Image 1 (cartoon, one colour):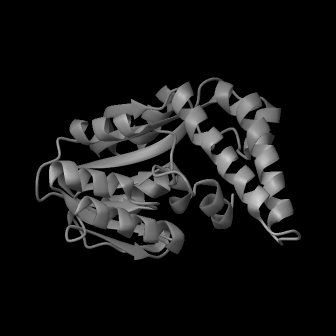
Image 2 (cartoon, rainbow, N blue to C red):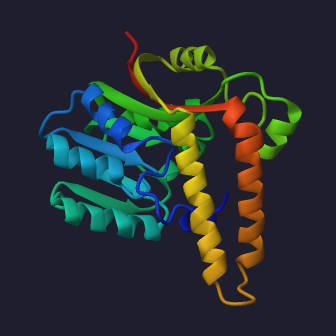
Image 3 (tube, rainbow, N blue to C red):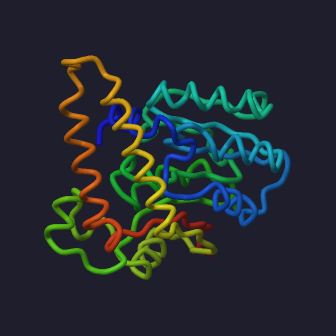
Length: 248
């Protein structure tokens, strides 16, 4: 999925992951956020987590993303919610971003562990920015049951790209992190995230001028995404945000 695919497919989404607004706000409560705390969010998308938590909890922070389309939406959302003085957004490769050491109470990468080449690498990207005792949030898929070859091919994943929930726990432990909480997506939130993309792409295709150079690619992307979600994702692929702390 290219950046252009994301920008079209998620044009109507505020949260660019299969998590509901209610669960996003629950996650903030779980993290026991306090006024003045700072968060670094890599691959922040439209910044809904940073801005909503800033409004609710009085926190601040920095979001980094490659898409200027998403960052424009994030800045507009910050202005709408009255938190522009506390949150900022920077355009850049989140996988190459160098943050101030031990400067953040919460560090996060929700749904984009590809920035670090996988779960372990993303933990290492985030770790230097985290203050002692702070929390790390990782949004990551997991296999709900072993996926057959057809599912792997359609999803575009190798068998060991993800693992079971208990296998994910073990990967956190191997990286020196302790799992302290989690908020998981359910079938409905997966459907709302995926199906909302279908409608956005279908409308984009309907409104695109005849012969638009991206039209055939977006049509293929829509057809593949619908079939993959209905045939494979709903059965084999789960997703959650995992709350971690450095293991003692």
